[in-house]
Length: 165
Image (cartoon, rainbow, N blue to C red; front, top):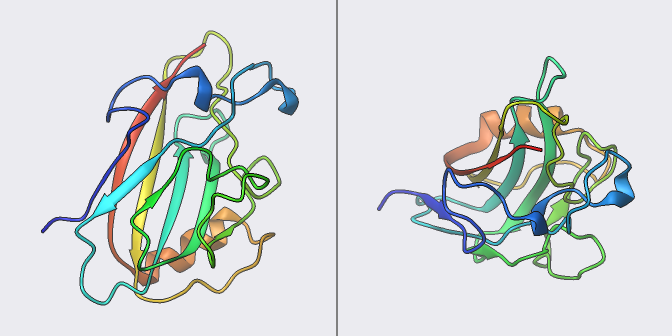
């Protein structure tokens, strides 16, 4: 069985609903609901000890993309994240999972909000099957998490959403 991720919130390649777009609270000029989408995965390889989830925009005008969400150490028994699990106040993240710092400077989901008039940006929601737990805390940067995932990932799968304003 192939490792695969799907979402009830959007289909691969579709535009993301306003519910998943950055809220006005962040001050970037968007007015969405800032709710992380539902994600479900299946077909994890043998030896999977945990999962990680990231949301990355490679099209951000930063020279290095933009990390919108990082979750690590999701227990191997978990096969989905429910709608709004990325909200630190929702209590919907599985026990043992840890959200770490995004490019917004804090842990938790921060939705898309590309520059006005820019081309559609791609948002890759990637699930990683990991051969252990990632050693980090809530302030660990996405780059450090990415480095650890590079050496500990058994399989990965992504679903991509688009957004333009």
